[in-house]
Length: 308
Image (cartoon, rainbow, N blue to C red):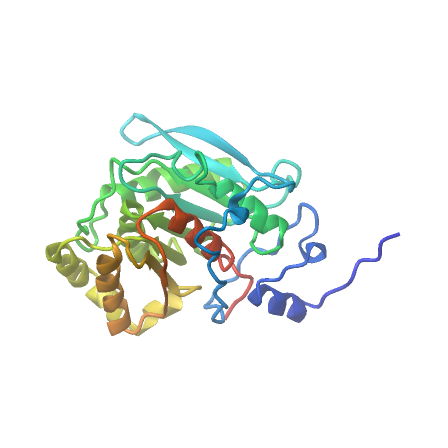
């Protein structure tokens, strides 16, 4: 008979912060408790895989989650589509609830971008979960090409993507999937154009999201950057804003990335106002070799089990 080792809550918390979560702690079909309210201790940001490393997104002999295309009704009456990843035990652990990562694609792509070919967001999550390096989570990948904009909307006037998220996407997901329906259990990430969704939907709605991750994105022209600074000046200068991020704001770009300077200019605003953040400069450019690596890195710090 196999003897299971017992862990104290303090030991589990320490292992979580270190990125090591033994299988006997997670348990088959159990996962960890729902994320708690409050700012978390600063996590250790895992290293990026090597630029040429393909092992972290390879299809391995591990339990696999499921990706399904979901058609849902828009408020305008039109049908819309998104891809939804559910973790390997979702169909068998019928009482378990999961945090949700809302993951946005780049310009010229659609909701299938993150899971088609070797982009492999689902395999990255499968491998991390099997290794005990990431929490079991639902990943929602909507089509935002028709609503994303590089121009920030005025304070209090949500742009189209934000209205879609708050009025359509999140309510649908919370109704039809076993989510933990709280801000502590929602993260928003996006690459390139999808980074604008993170900035313009996530930042003014930290009452809905508690973690923001921007991959290879930033305002392209000075006018949009100035508008962004003016629109969010009060939020960025508010000392309480840092208390709304459970994990520090994250931004990454490649050293030959066409978005590098744009990213740096946006990050300068966060730094000038003392917003806690992770800034990652990687090799490579505006490409999937980087976006896969950024997802791999950030998925390991999402939804920690910690509280104030």
